[in-house]
View 1 (cartoon, rainbow, N blue to C red):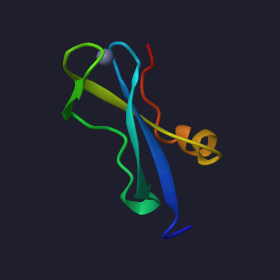
View 2 (view 1 turned 180 degrees about the horizontal axis):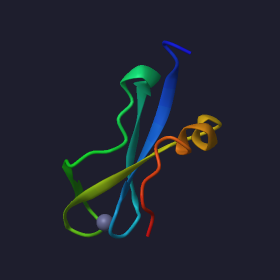
View 3 (view 1 turned 30 degrees about the horizontal axis):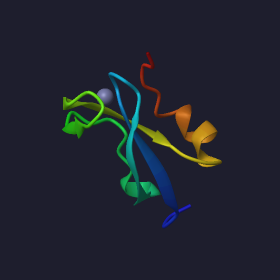
View 4 (view 1 turned 60 degrees about the vertical axis):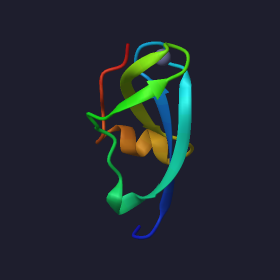
Length: 69
Ligand SMILES: [Zn+2]
């Protein structure tokens, strides 16, 4: 559905602590990123993992899979 907003959770890929979350329009969703983010737990820049929160997660996980530790 166009215009629908999703909540995306951001986690550190090293320690899996939550970095934050943001909302994004479904059509501009981008889960795969090469950006580095600052993780306060690791005390270093790290890759982030993005995951859709809520009821959309199960549906979209089918098409936006990524490796989990
Ligand atoms: Zn971390």
